[in-house]
Length: 165
Length: 282
Picture 1 (cartoon, each protein chain N blue to C red):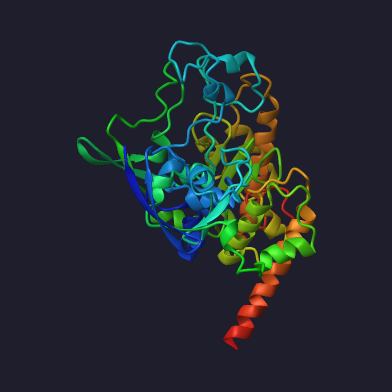
Picture 2 (tube, helix red, strand yellow):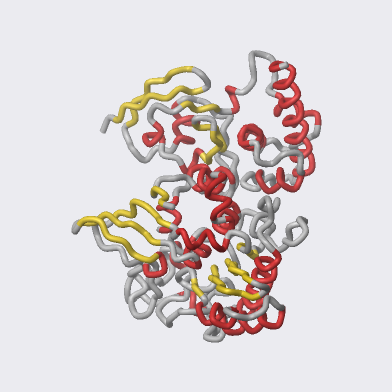
C-alpha cells in the first residue's frame, strides 16, 4: 500500500510515501524523518512528551495518524529556535530550571508555546498549571516550568507590543 | 444551537456565544482531558467514548461488554471507581464523559445519519444501561453516523445559574470519580425549574429527575439541596468497594446546587469543574 502524504515540517515541505496507514505522526517524525527531539513517553496520550504543533495547535502526536494530517503544517522542537538563537520559551526554561532529566522538556516547551498562542491562561499561575496539566514531569520540575511559561509569555507579549508600537 | 460532530472540544468551549449560552457545558468540556487532547477531540467522538473500565481493556480479563457471556472480572476486582446506579451483574462499568453530563441535563438531541436517512434521538437515549446485554453500548445501529448535536433554546434560560462540578483523584487531567451538572431558573426567589445530572456513577450520563422534582417550586436552600441529593441517589447501591461514591455523589450534588444558585461565574474558574479551585465560590 502506498499512501502519498505532503507535510510542511518546520517550514520545509516534505513529500512522504507511507506503506501503512497506521503510522502515527510521532513515529513518522522519529523513525522515518529522524526528528527525534519529539519524545515517546507513554504512547497513549497520558504524558504529553510527544506534543507538537499541528497548524499552530498543540496535540499529542502519538494519538495522531500521520495520514489524517495530509497538507498540515507541523512544528516540532527542532523548528522553534532560529539558527543559534533559542525560542523565548526555551530560554525561559533554562533561566528557571524548568527541567531535571530533560526527557519531557521538548513536549513541555511545545505545550508552553501552544498555551501562549491560545492566550487563555493570562498571568495566573493556577491557570498555567491547569493548562499545562497534559504534560507530566517525573522529576517534578513543575515550579520552574510554570515560572518559565509565565516569563516567556510576558517577554513575548512585550516584544509583540514593541513591534506593533 | 446546532453543533457539527467534527467540531473540536477546545473550539466549542472557547466559542464566546456558546460559553455564554451554555456555561455549564463549556465548564464540563474544559474539565475533561488535557489541552492537547481537547485540541484533537471532537463532539461526536466524545459522545461515543467507551468506558475506562480496566477489565474492558485488559484482554486477559473476562468482560461481558467486550465478549458477551464471558463474565465480569470487575465484579470481584478493583472496582472502587465503578457504577453505583443502573448497573447489572453483567457489567458495572461507567461512562467517562464530562461533556455528556450537562448535555443530558439540558435535553440535548443527537442527529444521526443512517441507512434509512436522517433521524434524531434524545442524548439520554443514546447510551444504554447494561442489563443483560452490556455489549450493546448505544442505540446506534450498524451504518449509523452521528452528524450533529443540538441544544434546545430553552437551555439558555439556565445560563445565569449553571455549574459543572467534578471530583478527580488528582487536581487535573483525570476522569471523574463523581461529577454533577446543576442548573436553575430562579424567579421571585424561588426555583422555577431545576436540572441535575451526574457523571461517573453509571454506564450513561445520569439525569436525576426525582431530584429536579424535589427542587421545583422550593426556595434555594441547603436543606432542599440535601433532600434533592438524597433523591438523586435513592436507588444507588454499591457494585463493589465503592459505597463511598454514594455519599460523595450526594455531597457533590449539594455542592453543585449551592454553586449554581450562587450564580454562574463571569469567567470559568482556573480549575474548571473542580471543587478545589481557589476561585471564590468554586
